[in-house]
Image 1: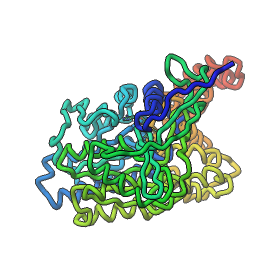
Image 2: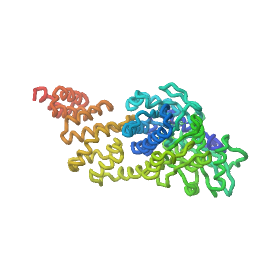
Image 3: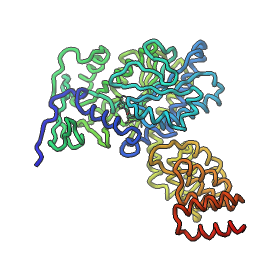
Image 4: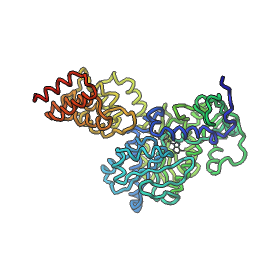
Length: 519
Ligand SMILES: C[S@@+](CC[C@H](N)C(=O)[O-])C[C@H]1O[C@@H](n2cnc3c(N)ncnc32)[C@H](O)[C@@H]1O
């Protein structure tokens, strides 16, 4: 028999144990968080990366045009709560390409991947896809804990970044993070504001060594705690909070406390010039906040909440900045915020923000992606190839369509085929290894193989072997392609490797005998 226990009672949400639970989860899981539980495609895909890169490159370009002296100093992009590094990789690739195409390779744009846990940093350090950017000094890593840190040290440059050490505007990427770190919760009722104080109740078998085994098994309830006097140490936070006393008639709302503290801390690193962009599930209008109902925790190993972008916008407005909020959408939305400079004096940048936040945004892409993912079997191959191009030749998308491309019954038109084949190298180059990742190289090789392009197929089968160690199918297909393209010794060696894995496969045995006889 298990007994009910009050695990914690009447805590401000930001002081609650739930955030320690969240930290423990990410610290313990490291890269496995994305393999097992935490959804991440919506916030770290190549389409989104291209949108973000277009905005920051235009900011650096416009800024350097307006203030030529700024070219002597780096433009830093700081990614908060980076996680796997997949977004960083795609943004870095896009920045490199855009700088070249725009003729601004002299601008020093340095991308900083940050996270609170060493386990993620160690993963990035040994990642082969990130190494070229490190070698070219375009990338650096830092431990930055949004709940504790206000300065950080660049792992490779060895520089400490502290107040005043940055000259140019700082770009900050904050995807799927404002709900991961401490939030407060408030209740507004008839012109009065209350802290929504949280009580966690659970059964004793859900507690081990003073920690909850599973947060989702705990019941959460709230009581109203009257707010007296100053609630926050930062007067801007109190001013923001006070706005909701009258704006909301009767609702709970979240307040991204650690997120706002981080923004305030980052603004101190230069003289307050900052561009922030964030994509997440969230609320950005009073109407949405009013219809939010109870505070909702979405559990998937860690937990997530709805980010209150309206509060973040209020903070920027209150402290002299500006918010460019995307209009409401179902699903994730993207929002941009500026402080310390006037966006409208940087026309290319201002246009890029409007284009990528409101006109065709990462959220719109994700809605289309979901529809394609669920219904791709209905579409002709030219539609699938067009979607792949739209998705920036994303291996994750190719994987979904790959059977349709290589199925003999689905003959591709000549132009579509040649268009797709010319971009296979881009799909391969967009591969970012994560544990238990899908082997897209095999599929790319298989497409070329099934089109009788044996020599070209070899390259992808070899990449499959390099990243995934080689299965029977990889060695067998390698052997066939070597044989068809006249590499007899390599074909024998590959048949031998295939037979080591599956000694009973008579076909491989037969082929090898022919080859050895000189056939
Ligand atoms: C939900 S994941 C999002 C990862 C990535 N931004 C994305 O969109 O897929 C949250 C990330 O924040 C990191 N994190 C958790 N607590 C943090 C903190 N206090 N400071 C900085 N990062 C934190 C986790 O390690 C994890 O990488």
